[in-house]
Length: 462
Image (tube, rainbow, N blue to C red; front, side):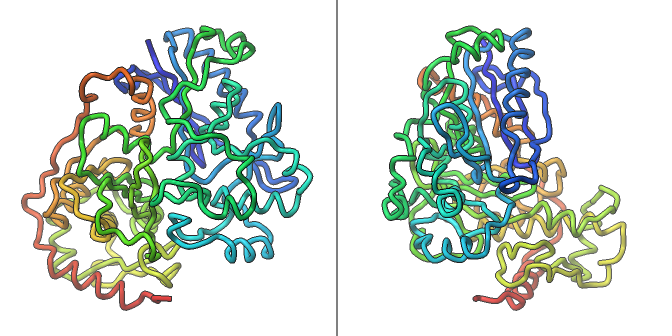
């Protein structure tokens, strides 16, 4: 038996076949295209559905698909009617009209209610709903539900609409993760009718709709699971392996840190880059979110992809450092967007530039971890861990925790696949991870202190 996992990213989509214990067998990928409009920049979900169904048909010729589950980023959703989308799916990088954006900031509620900052573009499902309600009120009034992306695809495949806690807790501003209930905004706007009843990520909503089974050739009894937010799916991968007292740091375009440790966390005060999501059980998972991948690329540029302990020693000894922030986002240091720069004598040396980027990424990661409760185990995964020095540097910078590195590049898909066996699993799911080798690294204590002081001195607390 195999599980089909549909992984919807902002830029690309992937379709996997996986075993019930999360081993990935094969996958295909395609761009997640957007159309400029009208009525606004939006994702082409009709074309994406054709691609998904063709992919399921193809996988079904080689694998006996027992269940299908979708996972996705947390900034997308679709307003739906009886038979399909009531409005196109907004591309979350599309800016709403200024009046809509300004009014939304006024009504969005406290940080405790939101669980995230008010981000750029149309990044929050609540803001997308507010925008559509304001400018297309007739379509909004006729709609039957607003579904987060994983649940939209579950609905298209099964015909059953449901809510799910990890998807709504991921910066939708519709769910207060710290309190495990809908945000006050939902009642204030009278949006309850558009939010279906919550069901667990692992629950089978039903089987494939008959026309979908006929189109794909999959068995009519193929289960459709409710689905899950991508970072929470990755976190579940470690939970299914039996780990707790845990922080997971996933790296790529974003550095996403989530922890199951919530004691002592102030859920009432907004902090730079702080977030609060939920795990599949509905428990709050405090986190940090910063665009580390873009920062890394800005520093590394086209430098040769090689770094050694000797390179790192020279960078530290010379005091050469990258200071935030290079991209359009402030990240961990408010007021630093697009003000990033490199200082020190080796900053322009191509032989050291990649090493400087790795060191900078490790410092950003350590800063994220410092702003969360200390966990016994910190698991690193994603794109950065393909460079061994990254894990080694984080281990050196964060000696209070056990650091493990997971080299599986598709942890989201693995975690989503494991949901299919959630109620029948009798032991820990397999997990392959190792401890990084931090031996021979320079002492980073004073270097990190200087870097942090310089970064914070450039930061605007407002």
